[in-house]
Length: 220
Image 1 (cartoon, rainbow, N blue to C red):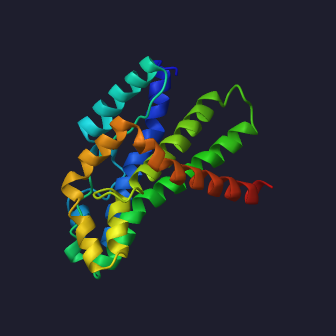
Image 2: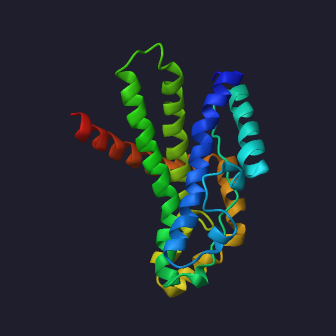
């Protein structure tokens, strides 16, 4: 992996966009369903400074990236400052929680599609002049699909956990919601044991198949 300053700067663009739009999407959809908490705190914005977490967005991914280069491979992930949502303010809290939670992964899938479209456009142009854009597009596709797959895992407080709580019947939903204080430690344990990538793989494969089908429909 080329870790030159130029490559890092180019990769930062899709990474920051992925994180910013993911978090802003949660706040925007929460506003649509009746909760303006994120809006009042200035989190429904495309300003990345409002969403970046110094540890989760910069330090942890940077260390994991360096470690992956040293050992010749590995999984890199991070997180942003969660957008505050007061689910009690939603018009139908249990039902609307699903849409608020799903907005983040949906935005990542949409961005992955946009980066694929850019990669196709660049590939049809001058290969030499499009090298930087092609690299950004590859990073954009990868980071958005990884963020989407990670967040769809049914582990609170990940988006997939909130989606599951919204869909499950009352008693099961309550039992799963009680996992939330331990969710971060569960994710770290899965990462340390190598199972995190295994659990994410079905989501990654399914999203890649869907993207290929969409791209094929428009370019075939």
